[in-house]
Image (cartoon, rainbow over all chains, first blue to last red; front, side):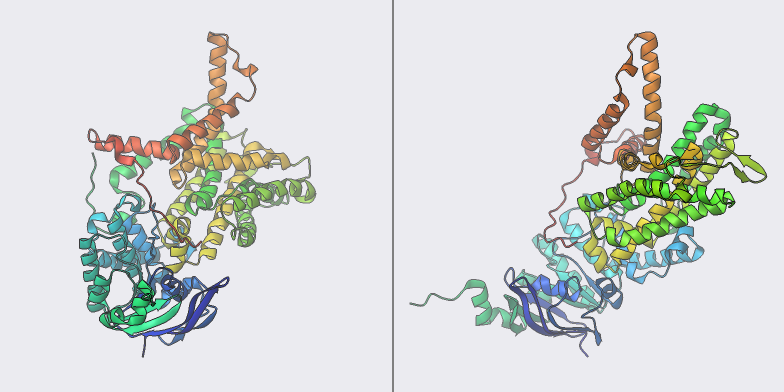
Length: 256
Length: 365
């Protein structure tokens, strides 16, 4: 069974149909990439899946469960984690703190137990820390563990955001332009990590990305969208060769 | 220079980072416990005031400093705490249950108000909470059976442990009472900050959208924070009532709310230390000015007292300087001094220069 099914999803902002009847399914264990020109509605689709936007129509099924009208804060608990295009980290906290917040959806203590810091809370803190340390090991973040986000280079912040998403032990991770603003080497590293997430952690990845070298390298399937509508689906090479996709990016040849 | 090697996760979980850290606070605690012998009655009273305002500051720090929601209405919750405590005591309740009732009443009222009010943010939230401050003035006059109307209510003496605790008759006992409440609240506050709820507050402050995506129920986190914040402020209000001995509608004017906010800004937003540093400034600055004015009068014959409003002006100047040069407040200054001492002689000037933050476009709130 598909892990994520998006059926005929649409949303309008005022008169603009940002997403207009997009359907696709993501199979367990695959890397599925959305590509398209700026303003095509890729990030909007992400925001719809993570329930930050209210869809105007259509249905989203995750693991067989309808999440179309689930509150946004319940999505993480089901196993969907995400990163943001413009990095939304907690700037005044350390890397460790950020990753621990990533564990929030797995918390098992109540506030009054925390107020008294009962032994149960300490136990749960240790368990969270242990799992967070595994993520730190996985993404080589140990040198930055106690550093504040505000002082970190951009490339590291990108990785920390992925680490924070992984801390919640998701089944599906949504990566919104993981390689934007990264150098060539950092993009290389990102590709390795995405491959590792898929192969070692068995994660399913849904990604929005413009860097076609990264897309071709890691994606199993690619969906091209333009102006909120699906254009073409298939392997990275197929989609890049599709005349409709070329038209969306470059425009049509002038005909006389 | 201290560089501790951490070997267990508990090293990060524990309240104190090792023995030296614990020793520092033990010394501070010992000094505070010895204060009645070290200080005269007058200064013990001032120290008690510092404790009470620290408690109120802690309350506001939780919602404004750690959850990022500005409130100009916390004097209202001091009032609720104060009047609840006094009204119950005058009806024959024992002090401790009445104190607990102040916290609960303020907390519950805070929780009820927070749902509509915390949908707003920034300047709109400031205006809405400011309105609370103004409304409470009228409520305090109208709810006469509880608040004593315009005349207000007098604080009855506190009977506890077989003795009578009174701010004037037994100042040490009242001081210890305030100290005990403050220490307990601070410990609870720190416990909260080092566990999931506290982290969710910080998450809401720094980025609501990613807090939500990580599974934080933002509305619930804000309500919890506001409600606990009001409960702490209510406790402070109750102690304040006994410190001032009598309270009426004029005890909790808007100015108190503003002073509280300034207190935590001067102390350092987002740090527990800040609430304490701020309280020290707020309580002791007028004293310092009075002492300085006496001194100038006696030595140089300059009469500062002839210029009214000088202390307010100095206070304002201090805030301006703080906001311009040290946005992290007195806590920031203290942090730098501490780092300088720890790293001596390796401290570099640019160490705490704020790095540029990256543009956050497409920010969903």
